[in-house]
Image 1 (tube, each protein chain N blue to C red):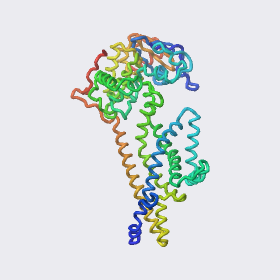
Image 2: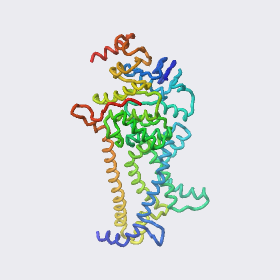
Image 3: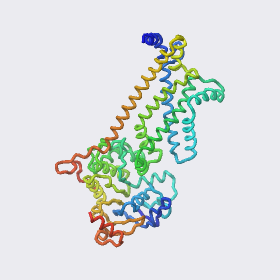
Image 4: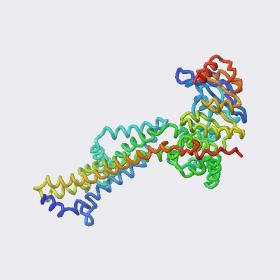
Length: 255
Length: 244
C-alpha cells in the first residue's frame, strides 16, 4: 500500500499530463483527448453512414455496409498498424502517432456508432416518418427534423457506452508510441523496474474509475429516458364532475 | 375532388384493392366502412400515395396522384392532402404548437409569426389553445388526435382523410374527436373517413362505401345503407354490428 502511494505521489503528474509542458501532452489528458476527438469527429460521420446503410440506393448502401462489416471483423490493432504504415506511403510524409490514432478511432468508432444510430432510427414507430411525409416534408427533411432528433436522444446511453469502449481502445496507441496513459504508466514502470504489479494496478484503477463513472452516467441517462418515454399516454384528461373532459369545449365552426 | 378509376393493388399475390371506381365530390363526406382487412385503410392511403397502386388512375383535386412525378412534386401534392392517422403520430419531441407550425413553416414557407397565429387559431377551434405549450406525452389520446387534426388543417388542405381516427382511443374520448370532425363537415370540408363509428356515419356522412375483400360492394346514402343494405355481405356486417 505504501508502495502504491509513493509511486502515485512521485508520478501523478506524468500519469496525468505526460511530459507536458516540456514535452507532448500525454497521460490521462492525452487518453481523454483521443477519445473525445475520436468520438466527436466520428459522430457526424456515423449519421451519414447510418443514413447510407438504410438508403434505398445500393450505391450508398454497399460501401457503408462494407465499412461497417470491415470494422466489425478486423481487430482494431490491425487497422491502427495499417493507418500507421499505409497513410505515410500514400501521402508521402510521416504523420504523428497521435494523428494516426485519431484517424483510426474516427473510422472505427464511426462504423460502430453508425450501427447504434441505425438501430435508433429503425426503433422509431413507422408512423413518425409517414406523418412527416404526409405533411409534405421531403425524406431528408423528415429525417433531419423528425426522426434523427428522437433517435439520437434515445441512443444517448448507447453512445456514452461506446465512448467508454473508445477510452479503453486508446490503450492500443501504446504500440505506435502515442503518449497516452498506458504509455505513461510503462514509462514509470521502466524507471522503477521492480514494481510492475503496482504500476499496472494503479493504471487499471485509473481506467476503471473513469470508465465506471461514465457507465454509471449512461445508466442514469437510460433510466431518465425510460421514465420520460413512459410518460406517453399515462396522463389522462382531467374529468369534471359531469364526467366530461373539462377542456372539451364544443369545437367552433370553421370560419 | 377524389376519384378512383379502375384502381388495383396487389401485395405479392394478394389482391388488396380490386377494380375500385368511386368518387368523393367537393364538399362531400364519405365514410368507408367494412370488416377488418377489407382494404379500407389501404384505399385511403393510396390517395396521398402512402401506398402505391399497380393499375388504374387516382385523381386528387385535378392532379393524377399515381403518375410519374419528381419527389418535389409528390411532396407538394402530399402537403395538399390532410391526413389523420389512427395512432395520431404527433412528433413527441415538439410541443403542441410546434407540431402545428412545423410544416407550414418548412413546407409552405410561412413566417414564424404567421404560422404561430394560424396554429393558435386552429388550437382554439379544436378546444386546446391552453395546451399549446404542452408536449404530446402530457395529453390524453383524444387531445392528441385533436392536435393531429389541427396539424393537418394547418396546411389548408382542400380535403381531409381520416384513417380510423378514433380506433385507438378510450371510449370516453371518442366523442371529442368526432365533435371536431363533425364541425369540419358542417363547414363544408371534403372528407373521406375510414371509421367504425356508425353513429357518426349515419349523422354526418353524405355517402357510405361498404368494402370487403378489396372491393367496394355498396355505395349508398347512410339512411338507405343502414335501413336497407342491398349486398348480402353488408346485411351480415350490419346485423353483426347490431348484435352487440
